[in-house]
Image (cartoon, rainbow, N blue to C red; front, side, top):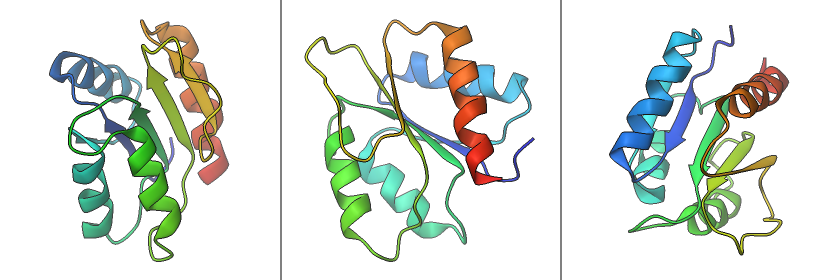
Length: 122
């Protein structure tokens, strides 16, 4: 298992808790945040960043695109792969993401994507 945690950035409490339980059952250490602002604050408060970010696109306070922009603009923040999750039908390629999964989530696809992306950080 990877040493670095997975950060789930999701405003929907049910989805956030389901993803956390799923990933913890798979042996991953998980951090959670309710929006992009809280996620950036969490990353800044830790000695090292997560090994992967599962990022919702549409959230209040700071959405997924805003999170990616701030992450890219801050040279102090660590770089990590980002897996974007969204129910939006209009979301196309987004700069700064490693992969994209459409909601409702196929859990097998999610887990295989997590495994593939987190391996890059080990």
